[in-house]
Length: 427
Image 1 (tube, rainbow, N blue to C red):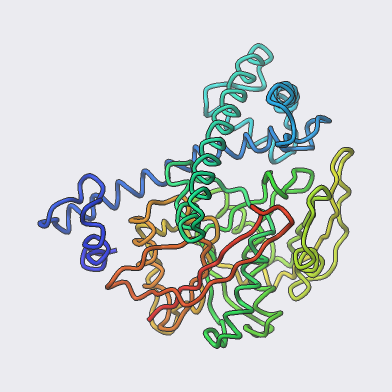
Image 2: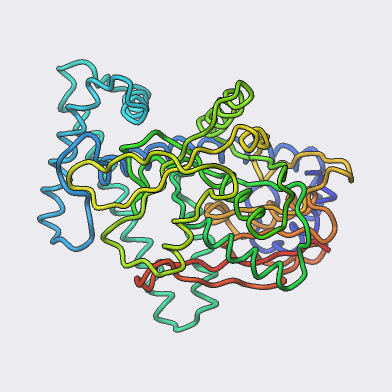
């Protein structure tokens, strides 16, 4: 992004700019230097996000332990004992990861942290590293919960949404995901279509699709690592008649080599005729609303065929749905390394995007960075194109994006289990 393109955002945040950007005489060279430095800082947060994924696996995984998943209905003492037992089981499992992709990832992460889990003498050190990170994540969760509770106390729904919209601005960039936000996108697309804002989608993009690694709400680890959102988007667009039976083309933007490598391998295998199998669990302990259950049952119906679902291991209460996604659908994905805060894909007018999806992505950035991202997204959208994001981003004069509507929905009877998706339209 050039300094001229960023100028409206810089002027809007003049009183709260990051160090290095203050002053009216900012040069193009200084702006470029800040962008490069910020891009490096953002990418460095992936390592902290990997640590969070490891902790999620330790707390909620089912493949390496017979212990129950960590839940909020236990006392602190019970939770502490459970976490320690699960950590000890992980220490044993990660010493012999075999072909288990998640355990291989944990082993590599531990080695990067200076501990070799394969060496028997390092067992206590492995345990200490895992416990330290688990406590760090739990402490962070308590702090986030306190912030949300304080916002709720003000009895201002809009203010609460704003608070949630940049809640993780200082947190590592986590890749964990589940099927749930895709229901929010399908409902939003239904309402956007009814409003006449999006008649057809030929080209779309998903920013930060993530990997289903061990999500704490509705992700498990007894099936292979997978990505869902690019396929869910194609499925919804076809279901709603917003895309042809042969489309749409979908750009997949991410910073993570893990995500991009996963998608690239899937595309390469699809070009050799291989389908992409997904397993979609529905947690049996959650009181899901009928719309969520209906979406889960029909997931993938427009892009593949019913496949054999894996059976949950003992102690896991979940219903399973599996889809074999057609190779022709997988081949519609185009993965690209992109930092949406500082970069965008240069697209000619005839290849501009009709639709961009960004769920649980912008929450990791400050409002200033969110508006830079909005400027980059606007640069890739055609006039009239739509961004769907479950964040509220400040609107800035000079950035041709304006809120055009809002979709709110709940996934379950839990009052905190839902989403608000803002529709942004490019002028």
